[in-house]
Image (cartoon, rainbow over all chains, first blue to last red):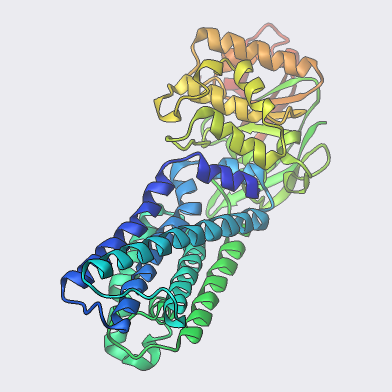
Amino acid sequence: MVRSEFRKLTTARSPWLLLAAGPLIVVAGVTGLVQSGGNVHDPAVQRQALAHLGLAAVITLLFGIVAVAGEYRHGTITDTYLSCPDRRRMIAAKLAVYGLAGAAAGLVTAGIAVGVTAAWWAAKGGSFRLSGSDTWLTLAGGLAACFAFAVIGVGLGALIRNLAGAVAIALAWIALIEGIVGQITGSGLARWLPFYASEALDRSDIGGGPHLLPQWAGGLVLLGYAAAFAAAAVLTTLRRDVT
Amino acid sequence: MEIEVRELTKTFGPVTAVRNLSFTAPAGQVTGLIGPNGSGKTTTLRVALGLVRPSAGTVLIGGARYAELRRPRRTAGAMLEATGFHPGQRARDHLRVLAAAAGVPDRRVGEVLAEVGLADAAGRRIRGFSLGMRQRLGLAGALLGDPPVLLLDEAANGLDPAGIAWLRGLLRGLAAQGRTVVIASHVLGEVAQTAGHVVIVSGGRLRFAGPLSELAADGGSLESAFLRLTGAPA
């Protein structure tokens, strides 16, 4: 099944077009940061630039949603269930392949984040430091977020099954719900929500807002969400009728 | 390897699609599963393939449920109306995906494409395919695992006369090899020319199961027997 899922990804163009948006977002974000007066001599600003990698996780979230919801959209889900009536194995294969693909996309985007940040720093006369745990922790956090959100996406797509609906819900959640909950409840509860947790993981201050969890806690919370969505995906597909 | 439908009942909410249905599709025959719209044909096929859970009863392929088969696609090949395709994918790659999942060597892809007459279109993206070509691709997918059992829902849909004749020959040939072929169809004329065994369902219930010759024994046509058994106004 893993080989089959891998082939699905490598023989279609649209997943790659979607993933390409990740690096574009990072380039735009870093450029915006510098152009709006970011101080290239401040190491904290370098961290902020690299933390844009976490935004690419939204792209991997959408990418994960396509895994199951996309198959419902195109009607290929029937063939998939026929190929593998053991649905747990089928979902597990999707979680593994899409999770790893999300991580790989995160790795490429991390490379591009480093490249574009280094380029801007050189252009503005700052010194870009690749060494230092601050840099590596930020990059590692962003990479983990890409993986976790890909897994969450697969789960979300399996639960909602309607591609447009799942994408709408995901984007609305990130753009609206977490923001509103943050406003209403203050920092205490909001920082446990998935996207806030991922901001803690990427060590970004982009959201501003509530005081975030420490990086390791953000990582654990996000991986917890990923595991929960993965389990939900496996359980709900098990008994469902496909008509 | 025969298909056994055993006291199958399936309700979707308030609607009873299949009601205590029992019949056997024997090996070495083409069995025509016919009935009016909404008679439960497609639901029966879906239960047989593990896509739908029965409310009661079961469908066994060679004595086992589809979900229990060790190599499902190599035991029972299927082509259903709801089978869709990723439009951006090439025909050959669509089949390569199925082959990987089924543990079937890639060389089979070329073989089945040639068998259904799509060898020239193998490298083209499916969005450019006509309905007839999509039907052939679906058939290729069903044949990929070289299965002893074949379940087809409205397989002739969209095929031109040459295609229909070709399909008829293919199915009869497969049955002659000892395979079990079930075709669900509205097109009685085609069923009459292809099937040796007939199962008529209506309102989710069995109306007739037996050799085609038995139905048309008194010189009547399949159509008149069908209309009589399914209670259609004359």
